Length: 230
Ligand SMILES: C[S@@+](CC[C@H](N)C(=O)[O-])C[C@H]1O[C@@H](n2cnc3c(N)ncnc32)[C@H](O)[C@@H]1O
Ligand SMILES: [Zn+2]
Image 1: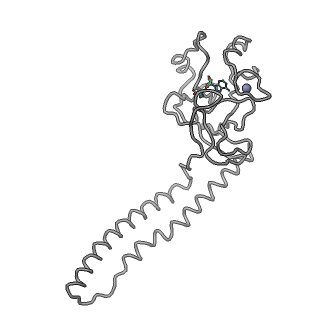
Image 2 (image 1 turned 90 degrees about the horizontal axis):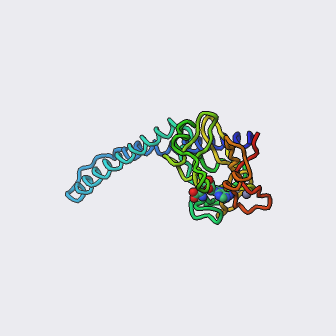
Image 3 (image 1 turned 180 degrees about the horizontal axis):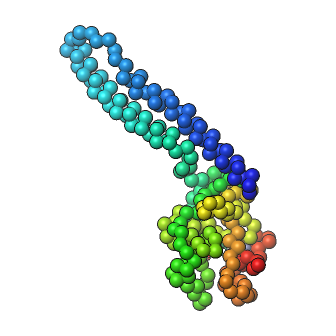
């Protein structure tokens, strides 16, 4: 996925440039509206017009000032921080809720970040003991040996993404952030999936595999959300 990451970085730079270019005429707005027309002696009608214009000019100046402030703020942050979401959540035919593409998404793009509270595995073990009497369900996403993102807390919609053994996305961890990236072209309306590849601390026995059984329905379904244990 190194290629994909590079492409994303380039794209962000492009967007930042575009914003900066757009910003220039916006900055020029106050000057334009602040131009003083030559003063002429006026009758009551003209005086009224003048007064209205003064008020209007003041309002325009205020708006322009605000816009200029926004532009400066945008220039200070070159990264597009909140690109519009290209996904939405609804019931999934596979399991519970799922995440779907709102628009066509090309291969090799960051689709959504998996955002949630970062906790330690020790905390996760205390808070979410695996109850073997219940069908398995997890919102935990491993960051590394020490940390995990807890999709039960402060999480965004990425937590609803289901697993498939033949996924159209994969997860990529960069600098402690988890990105869900498209690994093929995705059509609007398609459900997004990545391979959970879950690893348990205990052996992946047939019983555990069944408890974590997969219903993705793909031809190469391995029958479980569990991955191969190293
Ligand atoms: C993070 S949740 C995903 C959202 C889930 N659909 C929901 O509504 O809660 C993960 C859980 O969803 C279920 N799940 C996800 N993909 C599945 C699949 N392919 N087959 C069966 N269950 C799945 C499992 O219970 C898994 O632990
Ligand atoms: Zn499957």
